[in-house]
Length: 181
Ligand code: FES
Ligand code: FES
Image 1 (cartoon, rainbow, N blue to C red):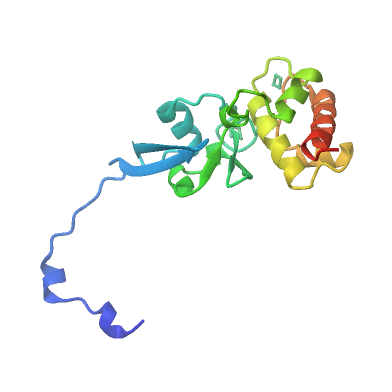
Image 2 (image 1 turned 45 degrees about the vertical axis):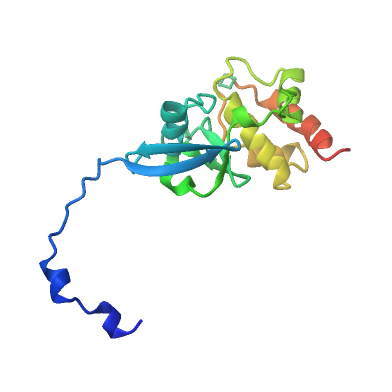
């Protein structure tokens, strides 16, 4: 960069500096499940809070709110992220997919949703949206080769009801359907 670009003019020096409150809402547009949402949010708003409190998509759950349970897992550009640790502003310009966006337009469930039902892979269900989003990504990433690998790559999603064996069975089943086997 040339030095002339860095020079401060007299006019710049005279301009009053506008202190901007960190709490002042910032306009942003989030694309979630194929729909755009125009929002004005505190810049510190997490993606999870934006989804739940401002867009009304309450499928993603708040278990711990600090990255330890996986209940808030969503996909951003087809990669799983913990929405409680992701700022909403960081998702602008990207495609966010939540559990509400997983079923087909005609309402038919995703193979992973079907498999969780077929294998009784939940009890209270609180962790289930995060488990399913993580499981879909786990298969797409190629990290569902066998039950041991599934357990390792699903280890960020905790289940207080300990439905783990059935969750692994559901992922094995859904993987073959997702891959058309
Ligand atoms: S709520 Fe995000 S990891 Fe627990
Ligand atoms: S089904 Fe209850 S926490 Fe997982």
